[in-house]
Length: 244
Image 1 (cartoon, rainbow, N blue to C red):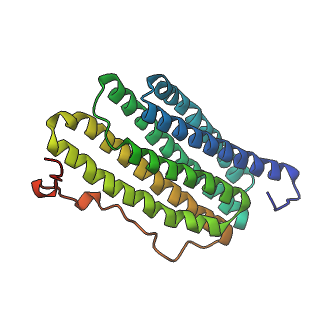
Image 2 (spheres, helix red, strand yellow):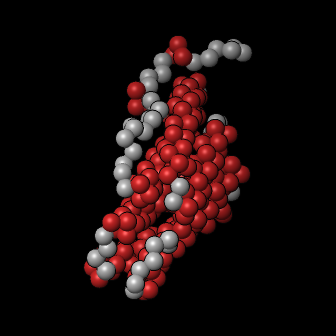
Image 3 (cartoon, helix red, strand yellow):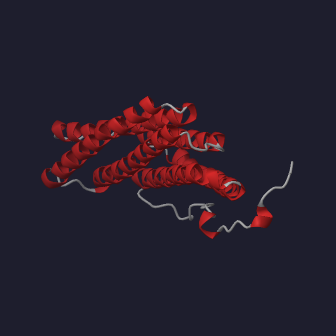
């Protein structure tokens, strides 16, 4: 923390929740990395390790909540200190949700691998996840450095996740229409893709909260949103006939 307080224990309290948040963010980033590797390599053992790792994320959020409530009750922070505590609570909530989506990703990976189901378009899923991982890392760095500029770049980067989601949605629906045997596997992949897209949304929200933490103002511009899957309809004419 850059701000010094007369009561040194107040600084300790603020540093404590900041440290917990960074630890939680680092663990979420690691969990997503391992869940993605499990999906790419069809590694059920690694997927199950990711499922177990979610408990630590939940525990860290509980610790942040407990410490933040004590600060609010006993210190009654104002101005920048109040923003720090409240934004830490909000960011921890977003990280916990990303952890939940990662756990669901690992659970579906385990199901797909066990059933030896269709796993087309894995490459696009991996690229989506890698972009979100990069966004998480940048968000943690931006929070640590109080860098509103980088946070704004993260908000914009989320549109790339949405665009990949749009492409993948169309691809997987086409695979299902081409062969009904692909339906089960593709449905799980669609859910995984939506999980990753929602992770990107949560990281973009974290970036927005970092901007408010640093500047005291919410971004005036509306965050670009490129997810069009709720409006997509794929018909027989949309299926490629190349090679038939």
